[in-house]
Image (cartoon, rainbow, N blue to C red):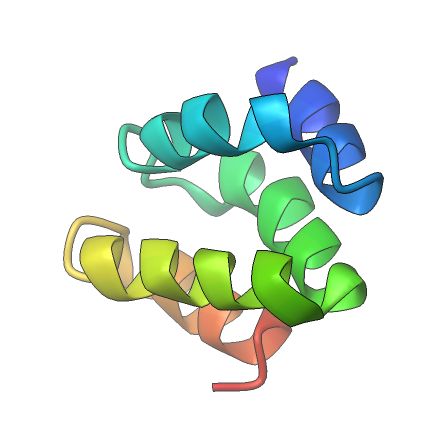
Length: 77
């Protein structure tokens, strides 16, 4: 459920969501939960996109192999 709220906040560049969302993606490793977040990041661009790339770089070894691949594809890395 949080992935829906966080992705909506990212789409709308709602800054109070950024901190909790970063913490949350650091605790989830499955693509089921990460897909909506990183999809929102790929559509927003700018500083939000760069922040999401930082989240991915910090957590890429924590995510499952499939999730890490999916996030790389979504962020065009």
